[in-house]
Image (cartoon, rainbow, N blue to C red; front, side, top):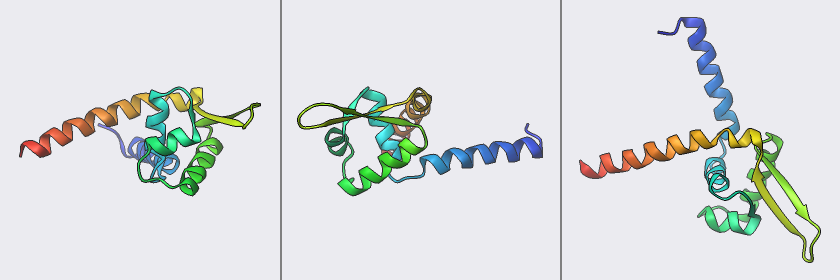
Length: 113
């Protein structure tokens, strides 16, 4: 069992993580980038149902600021921009996998009842 100080540190760490992942679409975007190494803006826009251009742009900028993704501009005509998880962002793959597994289990449990 955690002592009170360790518990407070644990809760603070969870809050820190949630501050980074708190955007309505952030986890969905990370999930897309977990399964596709590189995605263009338009690909992510079609993969994440319901997100607007403006919101996707905002979320991607915040994720780049938090060092979760990189934005690569290719010198093509027209210009091509790719987004991908950084090495740091890839550490979230296990979290996304666990969340996905739990979500599948939860869906089955709710449907069964």
